[in-house]
Image (cartoon, rainbow, N blue to C red; front, side, top):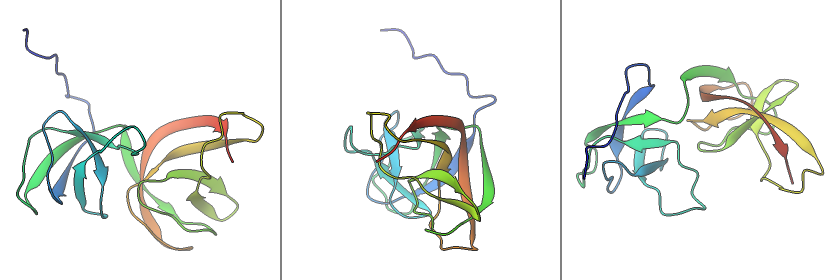
Length: 136
């Protein structure tokens, strides 16, 4: 077997504390605003890939994020939930509704909230680019 390719020179790499356990090369999910665990399956919304393994709660692990930057954003009416896609509203960003593949109602999402907050808070938004998709 050959070694896996890796080039992270321009990647967004963030440090997170281990919640229960993470595995190098596995997708991770946010369990709190500052902790991560391995994603359990296809229904989890993963935000990056763990760069090392650990079963020590609180140990810091680098994560290569599925995005290119993190920016503070203003939370709008409806609030922001960590690990949820961000939708633009009149007074900031809020949680996007669940995906509806029918495309009957379209909206744009701009990233993933890395922190939770209520209207007028500022939270970290992982910028993933604008993506137009159907919503429920």
